[in-house]
Image (cartoon, rainbow, N blue to C red):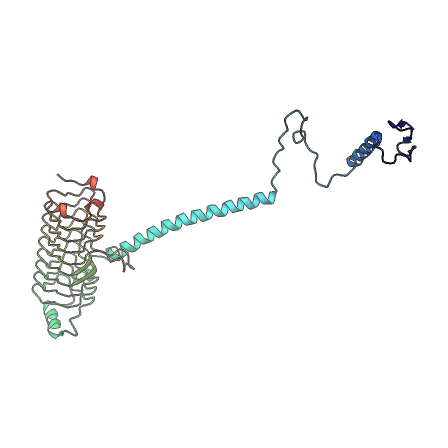
Length: 360
C-alpha cells in the first residue's frame, strides 16, 4: 500500500483502507480525491440508459473546448403531431374554399333576385293567347267604369285586355294589377292614380295619356310609347327599355330605387336606349336609374337627382342640369355637350368616370 507524507507533518496515512493519521483527520488528500473521482466515473458509466434512448451521434456531441460546438439536429416530430397538423391545414383549406364559394353563390343569388324581380318575361310565352288576347270588350270596360265609385274603383286585376282600343277613356283610380295590356291603345286616356303594379304593357300606346300619381311597380313596358304623356308625381319602377317618352313629363316623379324597401332586389326604373328627348324631369328622383344609351337631348333635369345613376353612353346634348345632383353617377362615354348650367350642378366632381365622358 502506497503511503504519502504530508508536508509539515510526520504523520502518514494510507488510502482505501491504509494507515491514516489521527493527528490530522481533516487534512486534504490529492490521492483520495482522484480515487473518488475515478470511482464516481465508473459508477456513472455503469448506469443503464433509459428505455428508448439512443446513443448520441458524433454530430450531437460537442467538440473540443477550443473548437466550434456542433449544432444538434432538431428533435423529430411525433407522428401523431404531424397527423394533427395535416388535419388542421386541411380543415382551414376547406373553410376558406367554402367561404369563397359561399360569397360567389351569394353574389349570384343577389343578381338572380334582381333579374327575377324586374325581368319576368323569361318565364312567359309572349305569343300565347293569355298575353295577346282580350277577355273583355271596350263596352265591358266602360260598363265597369260606370259602376265604379270612389270607395270601390273599377278593378281589372289579372284581366286580359291586350290589343283593345281604350283610347280617351277616364280610367282614373282603376286597378290594373297584373293585367295584360300588351299593344293596348290608351292614347289620351286618363290614368291618374291608377294602379298598374306588375302590369304588362309591352308596346302599349300611351301617347298623350295622363298618369299623374299613378303606380307602376315592377311593370313591363318595353318599347311602350308615352310621347307627351304626363307622369308627374308617379311612382315608376318599371322596365321601359326602348320606350319613347319624347316631350313627356316626369316632374317630381319617383323613378329611383328606395333602398329601404328592396326585398325583391334592386327595383328602379330601367330606361336603357329610351328616347327621352325634351323630357321634363324637373325635381325627379332618378337615383340609381339605368339610363345607359338613353337619349336625353334637350331634357330639363333641373333639380333632379342622378345619384348613382347609370349614364354610360347616354346623350345629354343641350340638357339643362341646374342643381342636378351627379353624386356617384357613372358618366363613362356619356355625351355632355353644350350642357346648360353645368357650373351650377351639384357634386359633379363626385361623378364616376368623368375622364371618359365626351364633351365635344
